[in-house]
Image (cartoon, rainbow, N blue to C red; front, top):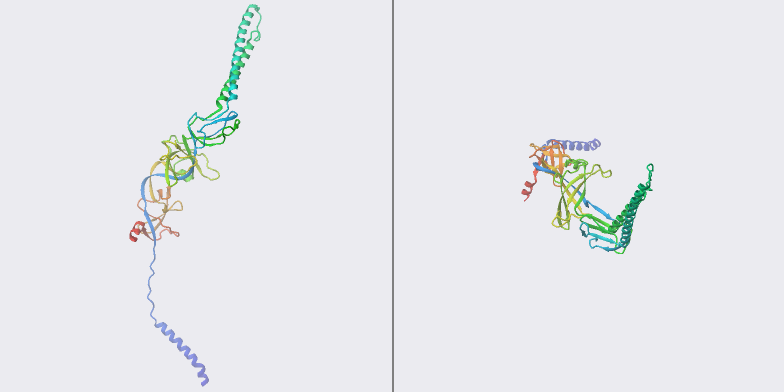
Length: 395
């Protein structure tokens, strides 16, 4: 009996403890259940507005001269004079003598050519006189059936003398040209880009002397994407009919800490797409960049790298919104009246760093999202916030 009690007592105590625990658990009151509130995503919004806008695209390019040439002599000789206008950066006028080659040999050649012309004229006069004499002699001695030859009438000798005169006159013209070419002149108003020779140097025909450019016009080759070309309503191979009808271009650059602007226009668009970059190049022109076209005295100098803003020829109605509202190139998130997200596809007219112009997809007055939203779902409920209101509350 004692042995049985020793075995059963622990079992009894264990079962009793289990029953007590179950009883306490059953008597515990159930916790109060609270419904979890849905937390809405807060997004900054801006109001889209309608404007009459001129579409603009932005690009960059390097200024180059419309007319730039390399100076090479057409005659040989030693350089005996260099003008002060023939120094890098110097300005020259049309017809200024920039460089002079020793012309002694060419003056001697001119004198010999003049003498040869005089001699050829004398010979022609002699042969003409002989022709007249032979013609009279033939008429006096010839029989009715005789036929004179050109040589007997001195016609061949006259033709030879005339040819010799023409040859001598050609040599005279060449001698005069060579003498003129000993002075290097340029037929336009320009500036010197670089000089490659010095006084006393012996040069031959074709030796590079330096490079000069005209200051009448400057050009900038501007790269455009096919989308930008469509935005400007231009076509491949476009040529401006006149400066007034061409798309306007505003060039800008920083010189030191000061900004300068110059005005120009598109003159033509390349007729082909660049094979390497897949871009289309438009050429813009600025008139008198070193004079009337300068910005507060600062010329649009050759070699300067400039930013360019190109305006489309026509003004059109567009919906304007911040650039942050555009996503994936052609999507905009709109908040409807029930504060739900509406993902729209828009027709983009133009984009810049600050704003985007669209032709369709968003109506004026609608609220567009400008906050980042990685996992956007069409129809999701959100909390719109106005940046100005938030700043005022924080203040």
